[in-house]
Amino acid sequence: MLGAIRFLWNATRGHRLTPWRSEYLKWRMETYSGRRANTIDTAAFWQFVTNQKRLLLHFLRWASEMKTLE
Image (cartoon, rainbow, N blue to C red; front, side):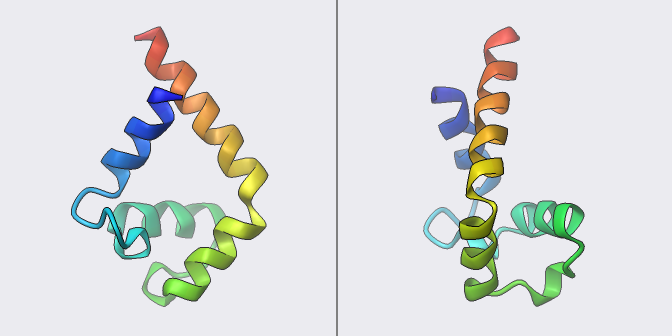
């Protein structure tokens, strides 16, 4: 779980309280969903997180596992 928290901390650098403004997260969402990063606002961010919750948790578990292998 520490690896997942570390990933989120690093991914939201500069936008800890407003993750929907993180250029990195917007880029990742654009890559995954095909939605243009410049169209991602607060509502779109939370809709994506809500709709993809299961896959996002799976990714965070994977990221945590990869961090422990280092």
